[in-house]
Image (cartoon, rainbow over all chains, first blue to last red; front, side, top):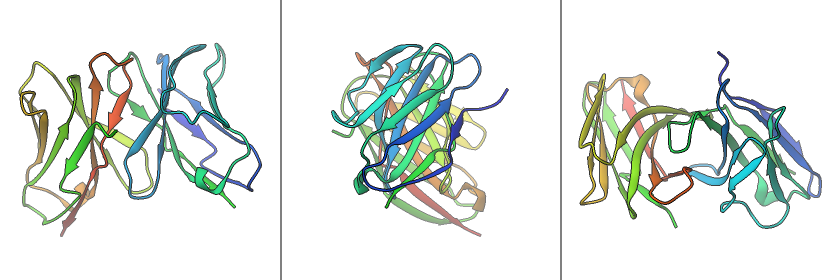
Length: 113
Length: 112
């Protein structure tokens, strides 16, 4: 049973480009969460999705950021027109239900040049 | 605003000693969880304690929860160098959609 898979592991973008981060949850998990972590900081909640639905996006910046979890395929976190301040580690986690323990992926380290 | 706050921010001990980390939170919760993160890696779940529980054990880990003080502690007994990592508490807030809110973490260093 594979764990939570995130790709790419490292992503380098120039300012103004788009970044797409992918997350495949654990088998049987329909709840996906995205978090952002800056160096030496804790995780900041971004968005919580179930299949085809956004449950809570209260942590998402209002502009340039979007997330989806389609019926088929991985969850995607999309950042348009990236800026240097978007550089961070982005972690995806999945769970079998709300409020239960999370299983984390290894993260995507986004670097914006 | 931050829901969970760990204390201390950093802790350095010798192998064999016990390590205690504390977490305080602000609002009522359904459960509180502790996670561990090795540098540059994803988080690993350690233990979950529900709001109606006061203490829980798992191997060398002991977690307590005091809902009246809105605080929890994580005790690691007989620490090992391999326990070196950052430890985070996370709360499932009552009335929320089920997403977890993480604290800033305690960085534990266990010297051999």
